[in-house]
Image 1 (cartoon, rainbow over the protein chains, first blue to last red):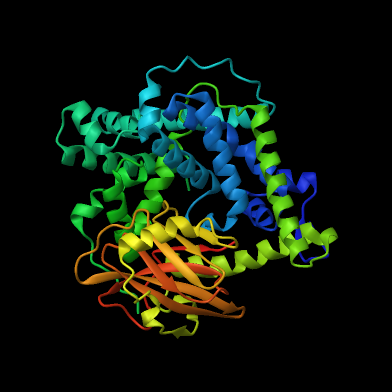
Image 2: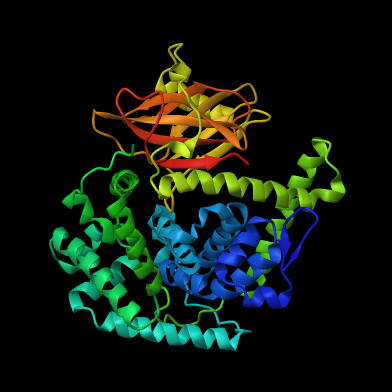
Length: 200
Length: 264
């Protein structure tokens, strides 16, 4: 890393590729657009997949990802490393924004009319894609380890964008039961992922 | 000293749904308030959010962002930089140093912001360890009602030189918006502040001063469930924060920051 005349630090391409997300976030805060690009290359794919799955709309998914990364550029201080990973931060932002859109009445009306996804684009970082697939498989197995009640409640809420009250109606269960299952399921999921080395 | 509220089993039960964005707006706002006051709950939510984020890695088919999406983001960043350069030109800054100026400004803002947010995240006993000056009656006392304040808020956004900002809790969603005019007049609009009980009130604070001696001054007592408010402060404000205080408000806050934002 080298220091600029203004006291900021600039990364070489190699340093950027090897840098942690926290280091990249720090230089993004100093105005390093390429560092944001590196974060984008690491996380935009899963972010987009998440937004698209929740919204069932490719165009809206792109808008959400664009908004979240621009927000990271404009307000990098919103990411607090002490509270969680960059990936978790971005996913939380993407999910929250996606759910907001989903619950907007206009989005709700058009959701039923959306076309099937267009053809996928090619990933230019195979190694990263494989790593994500591997982690994804671990998450899938961890989800499978939950009770059916926990899993269905979590999936309906997270991927369906439903409130827990809506989930209770869909599953014909008391709201208290759904709240409890979501909370216990997430805690058990975290424990399983820590055991599997996905989360620290 | 920070007020640490005891755990509330009803609200604790909502934490999982909170992490999945599965609460309605009113419940989410209630939990936001709870998290601002309860460190145990906040720690649990941080863990639950990690679990929730992991769900995004579950196989969902293609996980590739369209290549053109980065181009659009990059174009928007160009727009940001151009706007900054224009502002620097207007301020007499050397146009050739615009990127350096941006970096310096962002770095400076980050230092302040980290201090600011750390106060909320770490629930420190003293807000920013800075001098806090009581300016209790900053809320417009000329009879401006909430309805008038809401209308003024809408109009203020169109005034030349007006600066607006959205206040959010850490990792939370926007709960209020503030517009500050060049003459120091300000207007706040509720965008998600949940109703408090009668024993508590929201209080608005303005961050002024310069490093290493930022000054946090009360910009007004907002009440338990404000819709909108008008206030007066100085034009040299760098950011705003909202705390939850015992009614009728305090001269010096010892509470964690509930929501905050820095003016760009």
